[in-house]
Amino acid sequence: MKTLLLLFQLIIFCSAPALAGAAKKAPAEENAQKLIEVLGCMGCHKIKGVGGSLAIDLTLVGNGKSEEQIRAQLTIDPASRKKGFMPNYQSLPEKDLRQISTYLYNLK
Image (cartoon, rainbow, N blue to C red; front, side, top):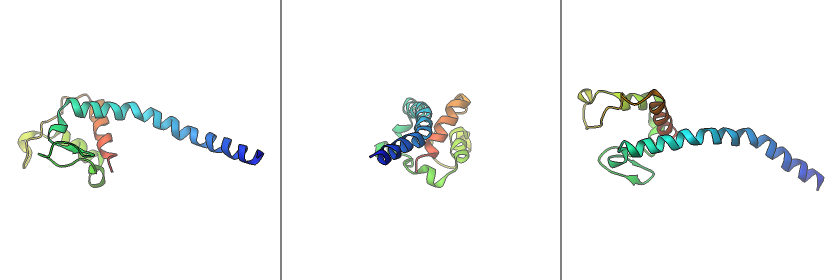
């Protein structure tokens, strides 16, 4: 019984840093999701079965693009796009761009 208690304490002790890290990431992820909603991205894009179908499904976008490539798509001049009509988000604060691109990159 003592061994079981020690094992349980060890698991809790070792898990604490990972849980703390997850808690720190949650606000950024939540903010990115809110930004995506407020910017209207879901009108054209779908994420995890929710949203529009006019543009690519972003559910697994992190499997095929780097975080930098995703950020570049957010800030590219619409006139230089070969197809589509996605707006340019260059005017967003750097923090917001980073949160959105990180969130989308982590969709795998």
